[in-house]
Image 1: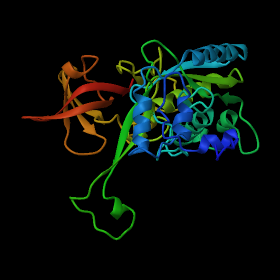
Image 2: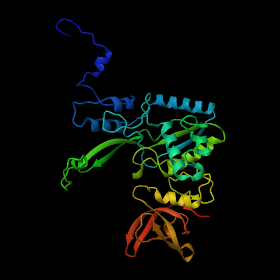
Image 3: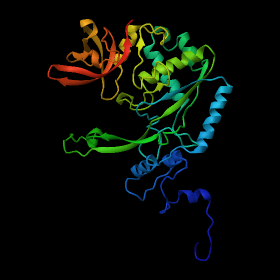
Image 4: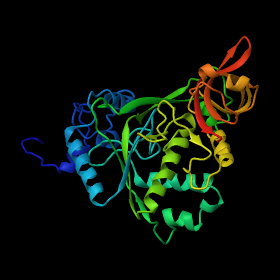
Length: 362
């Protein structure tokens, strides 16, 4: 009201006027819109307040999305798409650097506000993995590579669809709060200020995801399983999204050899999973990759007493690491196995515990 006159304002203008009584994200609302558009400048640390309120909601996926997901599954069956359910043993964050009202972002479905993985991200990961790890027959520009991924002018034989979050009982809170801590901010900005022990760290909150996603690939019948296998290996060994060097983004397919939630399944030199990748190539790749956070990787160089114990050569160098059959998932140490393990120091030196077998030479 202006005096005795009522002023009618466009709806768009009303939306951008700061409302001092504006609340925080509520149940059964589009969390993606809250995260990408909403910013309450009238509270201290509004980004952290927003992330806290989103991740603390008891139910982040509503029933409407469940109906949409079921329709999506039905549509994929109609086009005879090849599908697999992939789960995140740890956390994942895709589109961390995209535009957002906070300093960080995450890929959220525009309509339903639920986390998802863009098909372009899956295709890019698979293409990078193929070019880097599958030998000369699969490098960029070869017929095999172009058949799956196409070129700048032509399409490949398959389509990588968006991977939608799988709604299920027991995981109504897929969005988790995480933090990244920056040190010596002035020095890193190039302000010509030397770093000091008394510099205050900068803590930046962000949202990560934990849950299951439906992977879907459609197209040529012969090319679909090849593309899916490449993607399985890429998600398992390299991970998708940001912070993969810190263990984020790893995904495993349910019910298949790549499902290593407990890491009881392993690759062997005779397993035709990489379509031409030899044991030596796989070994080199696995030892070069970053292990799960807090773990180390190496290979068994020496076996004693018919597999009772042996010694691991760490991928990062250092002294030999003792491994006993009691800590091995198979109850026997085998030569040339590639292992992931937690290292501890005992009175007799370094030893491995919580061992996981990644590759076996057979």
